[in-house]
Length: 534
Image (cartoon, rainbow, N blue to C red; front, side, top):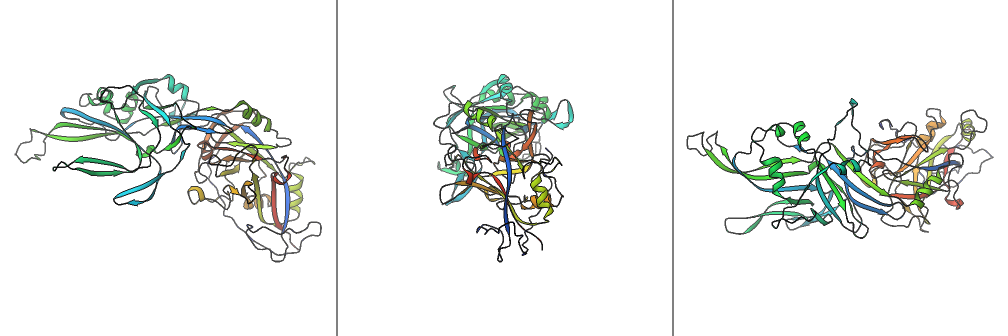
């Protein structure tokens, strides 16, 4: 897929003209963008043949965040999310000083949070991107597999790592990184782990033997680590050691950390973690040569004692590792949905190495001129498109309403990989691009649907400025997130080279009514509202 570069600005125009006598005018709903005072806008439904296909493993080393935990979908089963990450020196060529003593080692990984308010001096938070009601156990291992930044076969290209890379990392797992434990226990690092939304207060005892708060931190995974490993691996290296002289040397010496998940409780827990500010910090005490005569005794050859810290960032190449257990019945249903000739009764979309839906608009090309017959006829009328949309109804027989239903889906040109001209590269979060990519709606009768507007796209197709390419629909974790993730060696049931990165990182899935649905009112169709010239 090419990068998603070009976007159009939605242009809505309403022209009031007489309607041809062979098509009855249709009254528009209240959500239509425009007012049809004279009743001259025509609604016409066109075929939208749709079918689904499974996806091979997807690229994960380009994700903006990492996932940790397990997620259980009622239809698509359980997926386990682990990750491996390189480490990076905050400062190269460190001199720990003489008579050094390592006091503590602390791992910190911030959560994605929202400030909710204040209670006195404390800040209250909610945690974003946390799913499931259970817990998981987390162990951390030294990674002994070298993660390249560039493709070793083509150094002009960035390296690509896929979601199924977990078996390689597990086979190259080194020593377990243990928690700090005065009794030298060997329990997992984080037993029954679940992110906590409470502010973290760092304290110390002052001169009056009173505990005081010295720093307030946003919610995060904050864990003291066992000293022995870090003493041997880092702290006891001689001054000037080559392993700490540069990032490249360090990353070849200590190739990263592998975060492994096990023992989910209830329906497990899945968290998106922010590695941008994640670090391991070594706190130590040592004697430092007083080169600047900081004690004012006139000498620069004596030492003074100081508390210091040395930071190692969780930065560099990182790979999310997934392992899915999709029920055989669901796998068979996705495979059976693949029918490019007629379309399908049900459509399947699921994030990551899940499922994708493909759509061909305007029906068959019976005269074999290379263009759908219905599209040719509509072009001949020289119409002005007021709106065009696709309504995807959730198959309630397959998907129970609830928190495990994706809020957003994304449509794009499957051939070029570009978003449609109706896409607006603005806004963030759950409310971005609402006019084009509608959020999940619940109707008064309990039906649930996504309404996707593609007015500009259809207008340009009718003007022969765009080809009537096949479209693709995927689940999206964040529709404003641009970029693509490669799909690993997929040739069957059709070639797929990449998907939007927001679909690659998504974990949810759903089932939609297709163009052959038993419920005629919910069948997928292209709805075009237009006016004809005099």
